[in-house]
Length: 374
Image (tube, rainbow, N blue to C red):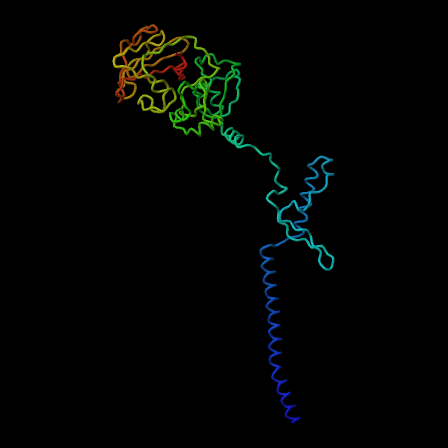
């Protein structure tokens, strides 16, 4: 019996060995898998968050040095900003050996490199933005030997821009010492009249109302009677305090409605590139009169263009032209007085269906705005 019991114990001991062996193997595998996972995590961390400790330290030291130099002496003595003020920053940690290990630093959105900016209201922001796009003016004092043509050329502008912005009615008055307003682009000033609204003024000049606001540095679309607005080419009427008074006076050459302003785009065949005068619509057969006294120096008939027209020469280098007349009552060489009838309003030279007079004023070959004279 003893032997049998002994054999039974031996058999039982032998069967337990595989179970222990399997447990040991499982433990080894768990350890290996754990190590593998740690390696993968560290590799991913290294790839996603590379660090260059020396570069970070030197950059931080350099930034601190620059700050110290840019601040007054008393400010450099103030205590340093706590590390918690930097979002996401990690302080250096110490390993078991006692050596300092610099961890990656994530700089917050409010980086020290960005200068602090004082908060500005929305209305102030809009005002600043509008001023950046607004037309700018400078003063130019006319020097000896200069004239409107040479001054305009030196600024890269049209002569008509200087005439319009300064409302010049007498070119001969621009002498040495005269101060002119010079805009930074071609255009003209428009004086707000009763019933005007910004969007309507903009539409008449092929502009957006927001563009017109920005151009004039406006922060709203409110405008006042008598206010002047700068209108870029194509231009409308003008008015400033720098107007030169004409040595002679002119009267309106016909009764009716002004439908085309100086500088505007035109469908008139006589002025396809923009009006150099004004268009007046009137009743059929109504009289056209000489705007000032003078002599008839040209008259004729163009099938497509001016139609029947008359040109009158006046004092001080002025000339007036009257086009699209239905009939002409004067001839070249005739002397005429102010207000004398020279013909009647018509549509000759055009495809207009309503009688329309084209009226132009020049001085020394330079076109002026007739609306500034009456």
